[in-house]
Each structure stands twice: as C-alpha cells, then as structure tokens.
Length: 74
Image (cartoon, rainbow, N blue to C red):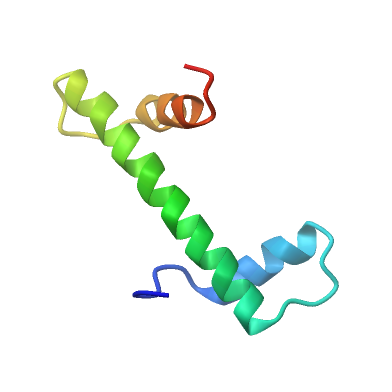
C-alpha cells in the first residue's frame, strides 16, 4: 500500500457494522486501499463535472453525479 490516506480504526468500525466479528490489520489495510482507489476515481469524475460546468468549486451535486456515473447509472 502506498501512502496511508485513511485511518484504520474508523474503517474497522465500518467493517464491524457490516457484520465482521473481528478485523485483522491486513484486512483493514486492504479495505483502506480499495476505498482510497474508489475515492480517487470518484473525485476525478466529480472534478470533471465541476469543470464542465465552468466552476472551480466542487459541489455536492458533482459528487452525486460522479457516483451515479461510476455505478453505470449515467
């Protein structure tokens, strides 16, 4: 894993809320890596929406549209 962007403790809580009884450090790190990759893809798409609208400021709607695009809805 490259530079750690996300703290592991909150991610372990998310995994436990999803039903995991225990989470290994490597499991939490893998989860963090996948989330970081997805967040970067989502961010890049959201920035494209903002730029297309002629804005420098990223808005909530840019993020939501980017999510829909990544999910194949748009």
